[in-house]
Length: 522
Image (cartoon, rainbow, N blue to C red; front, side):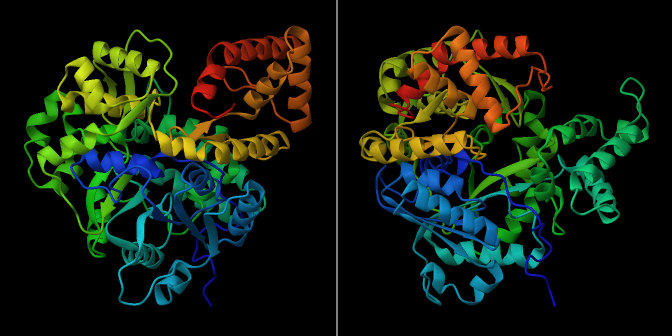
């Protein structure tokens, strides 16, 4: 009899994290840049959102807090994931979200728990599946895609992330070796098996200055293996431990989606929307290709892409040139966290991309005064909209600016502050959360437990040795380790005190004002 997990690694739970690319406003912006009509005509319109494979539920809960006008459903077949998710909903006092324990294959046979009727179009504006497609066996993947298609209303968007070739080609060797190590290891201690596999494989690469055959054939594998000892064991088991683990070429995934009436329309990785960011020497070969699927394949090959965040639509609604200009012009932007820089450099799948300094700098200067629409920024900067949309996409990608929700953010303010207060207390009690909500930007903001301790200490007026002692005590109670720049645990009390004082000053002088501006804290 088949096991309930279909070969998915169910002996551990998923990490509690947040993925900005799943947020409705982000998906809408990416859709607009790609010339596709988003599911919502205006920010603040009511919507329905379904997450397939919702994990521990934190990402969906933060979205529910930011978007009180939305109705959210999360589905996962792991009972521990659902138990935690439902508990979190209760703790955060959220009313517009529910979690369902269900198997994709079973839901395909009876989707009534999602409020779907046989033969009738679904009502969901958005369906998201993060970290599912290339980690499950093919029948489960097909069921997931069928559910996404059935659940979406015509014109709705499906966000799907997955590992891709050729970028994951080298790591297939690690996957095979780690599977063999796990088979002969103590199943209760998988981390040791992953470390052995990484150590053995690294020795096969040879010295960096004179690599062996494998090292020459897979030059990026050495850097990939260096991350294994630094990765939490639950990430490693969830990433590599499932029997369905199978990275795909983009052509394979897009064809499978088309079989379920899902057409590719955009990428949630915003720089990927601008093919001309590809190194110029490849333009003649790649950009001249008119077939979209072949062109996407060429770009992935040229950039050794390892991960995709694709957006599909159930029924593509293309915008005319003028319609796109009007819709993009209404998009509002706000400053997020933008420390001064000499060069606007962004890490993308195309490599390091340098933004146009004057435009990026002036755009941030205007947004520092107040949130503005792209249309008003265009009037101020006297630049063509295509130039501004590209620079805005890069600044969004770099987390220097955000998508402003305007009045809708004001409506979510009290709920988000309540949620953040609860999450902060839970973090300080040892829960492994690292995100709070920003109602103004409609997204999660990375905030460490140490930063919440800094905030509380500063609010009490502590400083100097008193502040450092308070923070060190809090860290010890949590069992948290202070690490240096090389991620090594600090053992010296003197170094710990220096690091705490430095961190507190940086938080006071830089981070605190940004968190207040984003309404993450009062």
